[in-house]
Image (cartoon, rainbow, N blue to C red; front, side, top):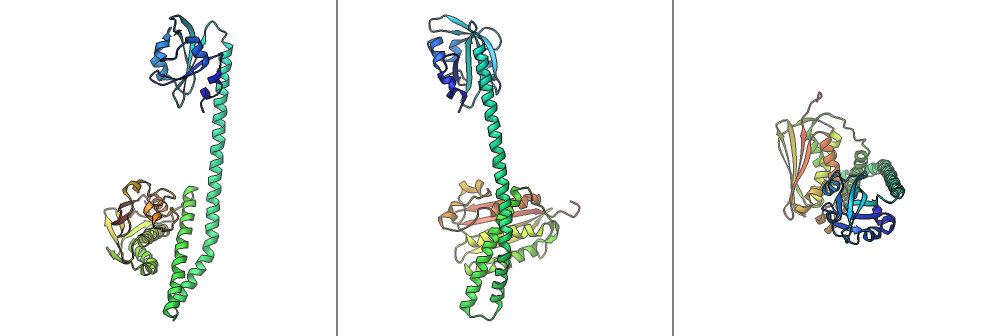
Length: 363
């Protein structure tokens, strides 16, 4: 709401108009119409007495009041000497005019009131912004606390499910144990996504770097995702060197790989295939995860790494997720000085490429 939408619109004391930058009068109050008898264009009714021309007055209008002495031309052709004030607004330029023969106290009081209202609005906006920041911090603290408390019992469930799978169970019992393990892994992934997002939002993300064999990390991530791949009848192939060492936070890299592989399996059709390729590219190591899944519409690519975003293809198929995994993964990659990019086509599949600098202990 602009000042013109309030008391100025009905003011009989001060002539006021909302003017476009080209001089077109968008709105005028009763006082201006009574004073001039018309409200065509500000260029037609304002004649500068000295100082900047009307075009300059409109162009120079900013967040503070700017004034010029000018003559206002009435419909009859008579001219009234006035003080014209200008203030930039979202809708255009707010212009006030007061005949010089009239006492100036009214306009001065009005300007003071307008400035007071603007100052009050700014203070209110600042208070609301502070409150939003406080609520965001509370949300992040809750996420961090809740996810930490959830991980403890879930770790026990995973451990016992894995033990059950190793026992001499019947095929049916083994299938049930595998279902428990897969479901627990999915919940653990969601918890890690929430915890990672909370750390990123609060600025508490810290990397604990060490010399890490990324090929070994890929093997570990593949081993963890294999039960889910078997359940979905998705085959996985790995390509690349036997070793590729980088100075990275192994836990964050594993979390990123888990997310990329989980998505590749989750979004692939039964009988689909996933290719994982690791290669050294100059000073960097690139890990590409390519699937034959449902793909992502091209118009959604720019939103793909946004927090809480989920592709329409995933929503239509009822595939669950937090919408945080890819946002976290890119944040982890960029924290290392690397990148995470995607190439995808609906009905064909997606390729996510994680690039990490090899770095060194001294870097």
